[in-house]
Amino acid sequence: MADNDAQKAKAGEAAAALVEAGMTVGLGTGTTAAHFVRALAARKLDVQGVSTSEATEALARALGLRTLPLDEARSIDLTVDGADEIGPGLALIKGGGAALLREKLVWEASRRCVVIADASKVSTVLGGFPLPIEVVRFGHTHTANAIADVLVDFGLPTPRLRTKDGAPVITDSGNLIYDAGRGAIEEPAQLAGALKSITGVVDHGLFLDLADQAFIAGDTGVEVLTP
Ligand code: 5RP
Image (cartoon, rainbow, N blue to C red; front, side):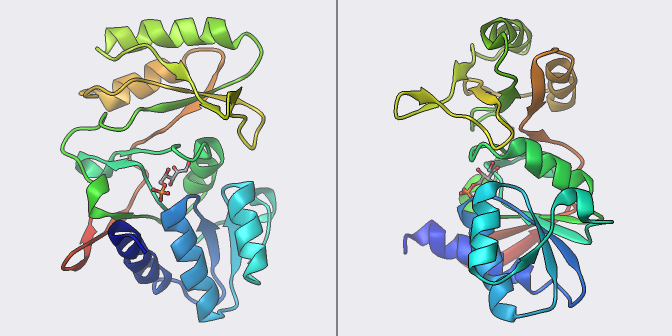
């Protein structure tokens, strides 16, 4: 296990200890969230999960966790998820795993959200990780031009269509991902608003004012951060 994977596991285990029997729990996506899902399943509590991606749904079911779709969950007590970058005030960049839309829908339906990460994810200004932006397929090159116009206003480079093995990445909701280039995001709330106002943009990976706590695993243990 690589060093930061051991830290990711520690963060996941610490967050799994927050779960109580009877809870409905939002299950994040990514390698860190997978540690949480495994640690949660190992506790064998009577809980139900709401998955933020098809990959997490498959993992949860394979581990014997009961799951239900977001639309059947009256409310979500706690969501635990990873992040690509954690900035000041627990402003986050998410979507490195292309699950940002479902993640944000689950986070927004949750009473409490805890982000889990290894210490390498913490930064003093967002933008070290390329910001993912989810767009509808129809007319996406035009949408990308509109995104580029917004990004340039914020001093950020032109976005690139995310591909894997030479083909565009398609999200669980059937959309495409454009990744902004790296660059300091000095005004995340303003950028978030400008991106959302573009017709073809479904959502973006800026998670602002959503995380209640961050469990950050480092060499000396798990530190809990609040906004
Ligand atoms: C997926 C995400 C993930 O939470 C994020 O990419 C972190 O992944 P990992 O825990 O594998 O580093 O936002 O869309």
